[in-house]
Amino acid sequence: MVVVAHGSRDPRTLATVRSLLATVRALRPGTAVHLGHIELNEPLLPDTLARLAPGRAVLVPLLLGRGYHVKHDLPAAAAAAPHLDARVAAPLGPHPLLVDALHDRLVEAGFPEEAGTGVVLAAAGSRDPEGLADTRATASALAERLGVPVVPAYASAASPTVPAAVRALAALGRHRVAVASYFTAPGRFAAQSAGVAPGVASAPLGTHPALAGLLVHRYDEAARGFASSSPVGQAPLAASA
Image 1: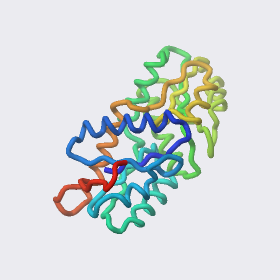
Image 2: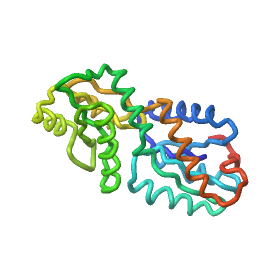
Image 3: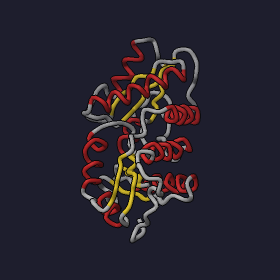
């Protein structure tokens, strides 16, 4: 299993991802679990793949929806590693486990489940219509779970912004608004979104157990695509990641 994170200049991001992978390894002690980044942090994904011994690998995006990275960057990296029979798993979202994690993070932050409340689901944003659709699907599922309106909003590349989503909820009579951080780890976008929250703001998904379980689930889904029954993702790295 090669977990593919985006990368960030915020040191908390890498620490969070490494902690999350430790949980994944505990869930699957017989599976080699490696880390590769799209940018900004080492190891970069091409370097991780280059160090793998020939064999099979599943690239599991630590990304919350479809977009350029999932559709283009990861398949291109797999194609550039011809010594591997590599498959790219689906992104994490949308999935009920993410809704579980978002709900728990809101409760931890003190979300008041009462009349007049609403939630802004703050996401990174995407120019890909399917990526935006994935975020809207998660917002809809979270609204069903909470029983209050949930408006998706974006830190970049798409609209509405978090402040605009807050105003939209206020126009609906929802004046006690919380921001649900739909980010895999702390970073600039998560901090910006939380900073404009008029009420409570939940922590990013981070090391929530549901996230580790979902990574394993996406790995299993992709691994079933291999025709042979030989072990998947067991090839060791030539050097530690």
